[in-house]
Amino acid sequence: MGHAQWPAPAVKTALALIGFSAVIGQIVLMRELIVVFNGNEMSLGILLATWLFWTAAGSSLGSLLRLGERNPRNTTAALECFLAACLPPTIWALRVSKSYLQTVPGELVGPLPMLLASLGCLCLFCAISGALFVVVARMVEFECKASLRIAASSAYLFEAAGSALGGIVASIVFLRFLEAFQIAAIVAL
Image (cartoon, rainbow, N blue to C red; front, side, top):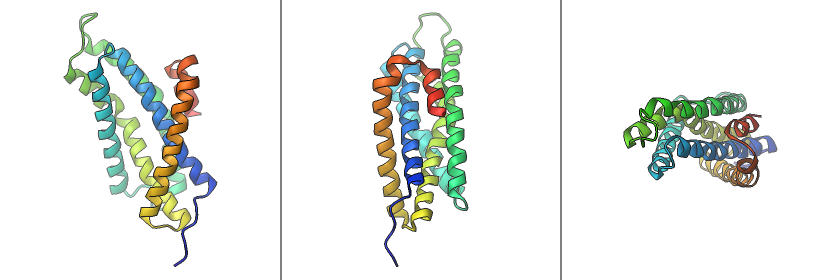
């Protein structure tokens, strides 16, 4: 059995793009939740817990449904497009949720409504992000003729690089000059 190849540039780009879009989406959505829930730190903990829950659910579902098993490149492209399309409606849903959760102006929203809003608003974006990781790991496995362990390691490496780049771009450029929907449009492109 020969040695596994290093992922092709298209595969590396797809992996980095997942990390890039996920971290920027997370930053934008955290900022929106801070606004919706009046800067409450509890909302950040709830957001992160919800984010992890839905991403894990998406990964499990992607694995269970064997997404990308037959054509991982096409499945990756479709899921990345769907992920890009989900960010603006997620931002909008979070903004609208405030009018339903805050019955009296100035009233702080409790933890249960925060949890319900986070669970409802973040489910699609995070689940797709989780499923996308599984599909891209399959793409690395298929393209590089690598074991699943090596494919997952490569996927983590390039996704982390994309996340780092996304964090830098978001903090230096996006958050200083753009608002949430503009950032979502750039990430979608």
